[in-house]
Length: 401
Image 1: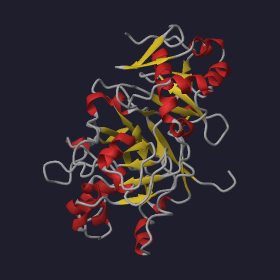
Image 2 (image 1 turned 135 degrees about the vertical axis):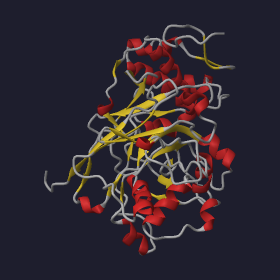
Image 3 (image 1 turned 180 degrees about the vertical axis):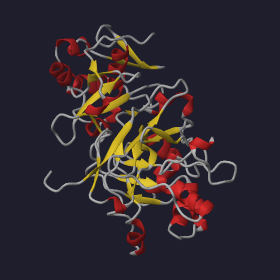
Image 4 (image 1 turned 45 degrees about the vertical axis):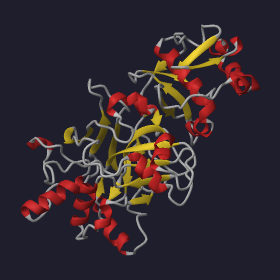
């Protein structure tokens, strides 16, 4: 039986191959009659009693989810079309992305049905503007960032005169970041002092469902619900002294920004192998190509391994975010070359500064200054943006402004 528009069809709706669900007529037509009616219907016991939970979400479903600004801390959940041009309201299913993640097994099939209707232009839709988006999760219960690309770790440690322990090749490095005040994808990076060494870090991150303590890598893989991009802003001038205290990052890692859209793994097609994304991460600085490192190359630890590492001694709750660390390609056994020289370039400034130091004895590329603009994006093989773009301008902090 072919999948049908849930708001027009009668009887069964085929959500994914081999999975069907009876959706009462009062639910199918509720979007057209009014979102409140549909919300009440979905929250009733009718759906809870009739929904057969036989699907593994993330396989056979394509979702692009965003959070729009609405004057609240957590924004409003919307579904975005695959071409990123339109959106339809999804807040009647779950008011926020976190709410959807908290009840993913029940909400996800209805999001999938709504997404199909959006693609068929059979539900109300509006133009999607990336500058109106917050980070998909404007705040989260957990943000833990790994360093899956050991080439990056090796270079930045050299930059501050630190050796790379052999264990870094077998035991992932991870820090716990601040998750209470994420920046939106178009929000400025506001800093008080350029001397802090303002740097971008282009990364990939996953949002997981509940993960039990001691979960295996395979269990961690099955818990991945959404994927997005990150700008893990770093203050290089503050890092050495802070790490010397032996207690990790804090002031040197201000608020991170995430892509306008978070997508289900299937949205990546064959670029997603279950653990890595085999596509270049495009990082531009002031309108010029700075990095084109492939996220699937030189990744020592894949994303499920990082999730399992984070859950080794503690459970992760639904909505936890795990980052890959700065995407970095060593290539040909060397440190890599700038994009202008035919190389894959860099996803952060610290790397090129270290390479310049190796070559000429001192760095030449400055860290970001007030007015600089960084753009981070990933495109599919046809050249279409997958997550939308993070684009941020560095601005000077003015107290009281």
